[in-house]
Image (tube, rainbow, N blue to C red; front, top):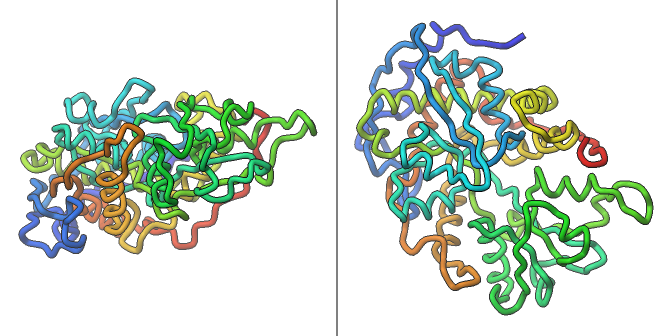
Length: 401
């Protein structure tokens, strides 16, 4: 049975938006730091003091994903399936991404109302003129790894020297480059960079020594592959993993982005953004507490991934969100934001360029929308922190079946 709030209750909760901070930035204390990395209340939002009640007519909204339908985006599909968007007066369309789709461009061009994108890529788009704002930092931790065979002896970043190192490019490589730089290696000279496909075949065939992988996707691919010497699946002991969170070069990834101009000029859009974030975060809370059900929801939404791979992805995605900061899921942690900006400004790519060349504008992120959304969820007794979160045990099957 789908769990729904009564719409009337949601309408009553909407009056908490003022206390939650969706008003003028001039009326509130900026608790996000000095704003040196952008954002933090340096521009005024158009949200109303008392948002209109949720009526019978739903507001149509669209969310652009940054990749194909999969459990990486499970919270949004759960919010549709469980009726959370409808409870907030929204008729939400989830737009699938792909190789040639740039979510932040789709948003800036007005093709969609909201988008999911990694922070460094969005910052690059902002510097290029895209008017977009981070309104909810859903992933609190990076999911990027560098994976190698255990017998290759790559236990630290410094051990990558002289090795064939795979990466996807397209802006996914800056954590690796920052890690190499921190280890005293020149990415352009001290390693052999190899353009990697979005799979692990080059590693499994030993064409490269280390491969880029996401905890929730490609890492599972090596663990669901069969070791030809034993006839059994590979295990974690067969591989070494470098986690950029541990190395201090992690960058913020999946966040919900909104149109900056509309946030500051269109009251209805600004109010809708609060409701959209609230419903989305409730979807993520549902997936935290119902991992296997959310995996099924995503599969039924059109994902072609196998059941065990999908469940692994949902479980690992939850690890990137929960537990969330005390202020609630979607909060932008200033230290993590500043680190992302610093790496974006100072880490050279193989061709000597950086992600961005100047500090992002104040409008790069705002905490006000998320704070208002969290207030709605707390009033409805939704656990927005997940302090007791524990991942489940997932058994991968061959090929992720």
